[in-house]
Every structure is written in structure tokens, then in C-alpha cells.
Length: 214
Image 1: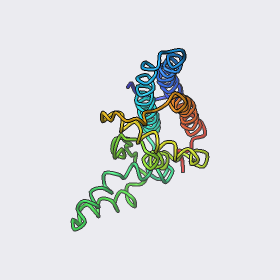
Image 2 (image 1 turned 30 degrees about the horizontal axis):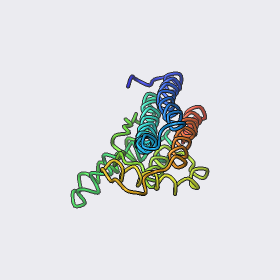
Image 3 (image 1 turned 90 degrees about the horizontal axis):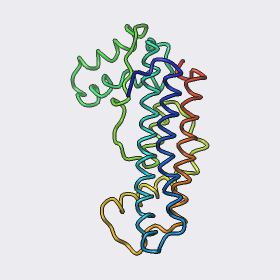
């Protein structure tokens, strides 16, 4: 991933990443039509695993390029929105949690919040990323980190969890009679194609509207 210094860098990265991932799912959707029964079963299983992988990786990619873009603004802690102040202080917060009895770590956090809040802060997405697996809880947390409104996403959380569970079953080699059917595979492909577009728009709006500012 190259440096994301301008809004054009951000938009270009999101556009190329989303297009590349959606194209493979469009191809899978095409392959599901007009195939022999035994071929369709394999394509259905493959479609779910690949679609989930594209969904997971795009969300993390979009989150990371957004954080990188905001970091390139070289803003001070007191200029950032609350969610990104937490990102900026994440390492200090983790030190306090992990070493509760260490007064020095507590002092560093207070110093950052009170005495150094007007200094430029470094933002790193990998310091906030707890796991790559993308169930609904993980997706919600990523949105909270970025300051993305989730109201329009919440009715999809059940489907996101079901997709995650189905992908895990297939990826771990389960050969069940309940393998995904064509209708479900197509629903997954459709969700991920539109989900990538939706999340891409969320990130673009956050950057263009400067939601990263307090």
C-alpha cells in the first residue's frame, strides 16, 4: 500500500481495491449459471469463501487507508474527533490496561491528554485491529474506530454473522449435506458486492466531510 497523503490518493485506492474485488465475484456469479449439479456445489462453496475473503479484506483495507489519510493531515490530538483521539492514545491505553500497577504508564497517558494534546499525534490502524475475522461484532468495532454511523448496517448483522459461520465451516473442511445452495451463494455475492460499495461510500464521505475533526 502506497502513502495516502491526499483525498485523491484515498479515493483512487478505494476505487481500485473495490473494483478488483467485485470483478471476481461477478465472475463467480456468472459461473453459477448453467453448470452441472456437481460443479455448482463446488462453485457455491468456493463462492462463499472467496466472497467472505473479499469482504473482510476490503473492510480492513478501507479502514487502514482512511486512518493513513487522517494521519497524513498531521493533526494534534485536540483537533481529532473523539474516536480518533482513542486511536492516537491506543498504545498508552493498552499499557495502562496491561500494567495496571505501573504508575509511569498512567502518567504518560495523562501527560498525553493534558500536556501534549496540542502536539501532532501518530495514528496507526494496526494498533486498533484486534482480529481479522469479520463477524458483526468486529465490523461494529471497526465502524466505531472510524466514526462510521452503523444504523443502516444493523439489519445486515445477522447475515454477516451467518456468512462468517458458513465460511468457517467450509474453510475448515466440513463436507455437510447443508452445503450452500445456489440461492444462498448468489445472495452472498450480491451482499458483498453491494457491501463493498456501501462501506466505500461511508469512508469517502467521512474523508470528504472531514468527520475526523472534533
